[in-house]
Image 1 (cartoon, helix red, strand yellow):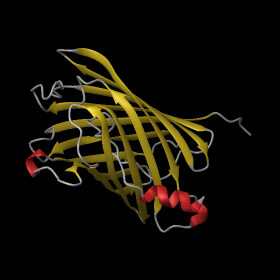
Image 2 (tube, helix red, strand yellow):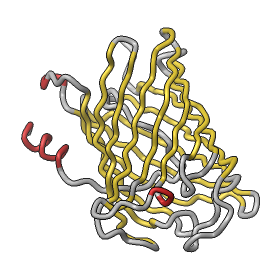
Image 3 (cartoon, one colour):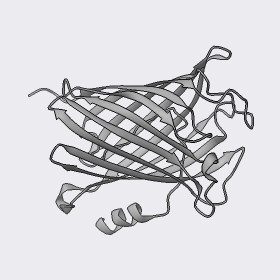
Image 4 (cartoon, one colour):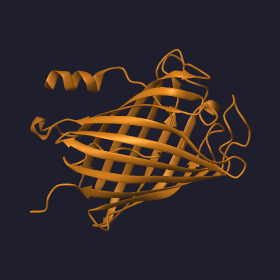
Length: 257
């Protein structure tokens, strides 16, 4: 069993570009067995693409609302579901796709020096809103807490199964987060989201996607999670200004003792 898990973490990976529907760097722990978390990922693109590119509608002034539901199946395995929606003044509110995401974490008995888990995600989205209509990703998750400092890396890679463009190799899209606990209930930090292109031939820098978000995480109640902040694109291919807000609520379905 341990060999299979280690092999899974090291397998070649596949990518689904987040495209501003779920802007999140994932931590390694899975949802507690028997608990469910309902999360609403909201973001608004203040400064984005204004042109139709390869049949995909512009992101300018788009409001994205994504419902994520994750349930803890075992002590180190969870299953997540996403429902993506998009609103723009010109095109109204549309449901554009769904994804399914199983995730497994390295058990505590391994006594690893870092947190380690592997997320797989597969799903469909409308061709009017994504150049990748059907895709698959694997997202290794590595994190570490050092005192009040938190570090997390998601070296995500993946493949387009169907879409306008089908890269000749897996695409590399690393995500990274660092935050500092300024109090027991508040952490401040930065999140990086990148998309460099196919592994066998990275895109030229202006065509790559690079964005940095300055975020706050609130831990006001163990049942709730809050993450929000503005993000700034660093290249021509990246939306210039996006504000994101994530609100999550945990529910324990077990009987109270």
